[in-house]
Length: 199
Figure 1 (spheres, rainbow, N blue to C red):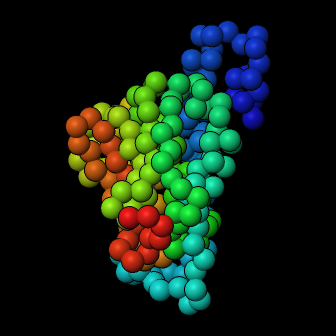
Figure 2 (cartoon, rainbow, N blue to C red; figure 1 turned 45 degrees about the vertical axis):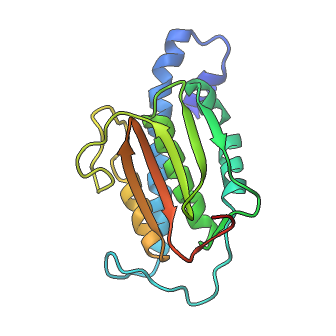
């Protein structure tokens, strides 16, 4: 709260604003980690890597609405990073996942894209090959990226966010794939047969 008050204060010196930005990013990444840990703690314990079928039908979650909510809540962060969002989702695009799960996963992936992407860059959000994908320009990923405690040298996070997001998705029969090519990182959520909407 103190960081947000200082960032909103027009009397705050520009040099201090620059110092506050990495602190705000670190707080955001820690908040996403805590959210994912709490959600995993509420899930039924299963063997690692073994998805569990829901006992009742799971309503589909709409990524576009959740992305819009995240953008509104993080408008200041987007402005600070001078990031442009290229959103090509449609209203009827959906993932057969519980909405709270998709909300935590999306927040983790978008926070990573902002924190680790190049300031002034573009983050692309859309469907590709029946998967929800978030793509942004970034440096090469370290070996084992996405595993627990694996993070880049410049990262202010814990190195747990993607691992927790992947484990949370596995509990619901979905997958998270993170790749890096041609100077861009792409994180995709989905599984054949679970994604509805356009191909």
